[in-house]
Image (cartoon, rainbow, N blue to C red; front, top):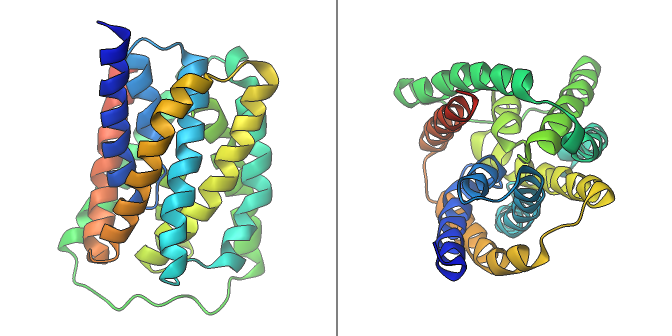
Length: 255
């Protein structure tokens, strides 16, 4: 396939991914990377480019959530130290690590949590309220959780939103849309740390990043604006379906 046609397909897909994933508190890194791999890019280029696009999507979508007061900054920054340290380490180590076992564990996790989130579509609705405070034990749990998410993010080129949103929704008991908005802020730090880790060990593909970055910026803004008009249970169910789709893509890659 001609390289210009290939790049056009990638640009179109990048816009669609940014639009859809920004609605659910994700940067789209879980799909950017597999798409680039399918089009023939090597793993380190796919992963590092995915993280850059993840950063752009999260920042653009996060701004929309911020304008609608859907970000809890205090809670979000509890995730930042662990996720930054883990993402930098994962990004730096990614060229040297065999991630097959990690991918298998990730598949099982995505299938299970995805099922729980899809099931919420049929549950009776309830008023979602922001928790008044997080306990000291929850603070400790967030630190360890964020470190693990950051490591996975850097190794696989995913932003971590697919893990952060369910954690904030079911463990921290945050409203769905606030969890999605806060996730965008957290992902921004995670993606940036992963990018720096990648840049320390190999060169980024600047032309590819430039070609896809603009459409991802636009898609992130449009997707976040659309999410403001979507019911929370639909956001949870949609995220669950995305988790299943990602699990299927990883399974095909592993098999």
